[in-house]
Length: 210
Image (cartoon, rainbow, N blue to C red; front, side, top):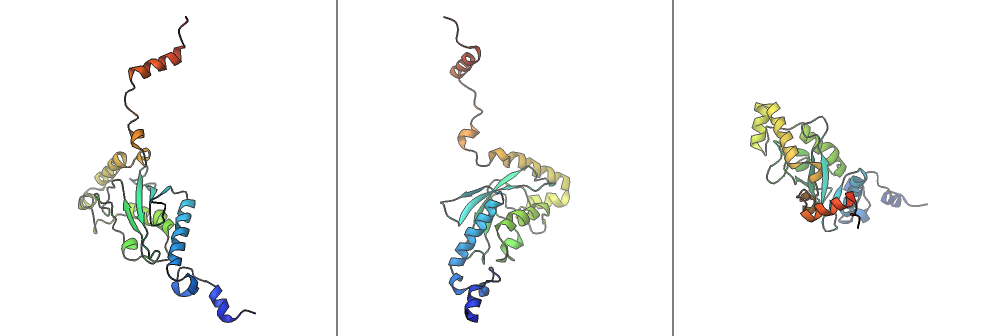
């Protein structure tokens, strides 16, 4: 019969608390396993993820604006960086394409969100970030702690005008088809040459009789 000490060693009641882990998992091995597990969980939740250099420390995630908000219909590319100490240290989150929001820096894309910057817990994971924290940030902006002073002032002064400005930014910077579009795809609206017109006409009308 195994000793009591061995039973305690093999049992992990709370995998997110360092003092309840077996000694073999405490240290660098657990953060590495946790990064891989959380990333896989995010992918299984139908989020489009693009890795950087085939590692788990840095990647991009496509984030859709929450429904019933002025951000609905927009898609933003989010840059995520996981520190070596993740999940005990919070991830770094930033918008790549422009976002009009009091708590998002328009130039850098960095966000002001307490749960990321101050009150992060290893109980949270990446799915929480994209399904709870970011939607709440967009649904409930805080103009009293702004990174974008203009957006904060407009929200407090004239909310309909603020929401209209948000929609304009969505149309200009967050169209779904623009996320990940290559330069070739973006330039596909060029006028076809005369040769292309001629060849297409021959295909439609058929070759002339000899």
